[in-house]
Image (cartoon, rainbow, N blue to C red):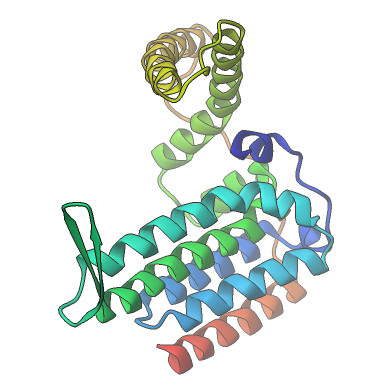
Length: 253
């Protein structure tokens, strides 16, 4: 499901025409506000608002579900485990065979905070990733004077992602043809084998990519095209958005 969500082409929405630097600035500010608060309410509100905004501008619920379902599972797991490992005020107790699990009141609060931060942060990032092309990302990062090596790593990682997914799909199909997922234990063994094979093939492809880049005159620098000048509306949107984010942080911290 996650791989299918990554492969889906981003739709053209109203936010697609907003300058990438504006969206990047507001995204970073929202992430800082959502992760620096001690309350779970603010990051959760940011997440809900972000998802509603994506639905309003035309992003389908199917696409959002495909991309966020694994994140919801992760948030549930992280938040649920905090109940049993953090706190000192017992709230409930479970006896499972010879194991004794104690849930703590403080753990519920900490788990809710972690889960809200994960959901809110990914939802905020989804607004940027679903409405901005990679080219706009790179241009915005270069305009903000982000170190060149970080832009290079991001570019190479993005171009290698789809190669990695293709290799993973081929390996999974080959194992399915050989009944590699017939039983639970056999599925675990197949997944382990895929991980080992995939690591070796990715390393081999990275070496060949480096050799190809050197043969084409790569000197350690990636040229970035000049971006257009900021318009008055872009500056107003940035200022208005920063005021709202800062005000929400003061209220919800």
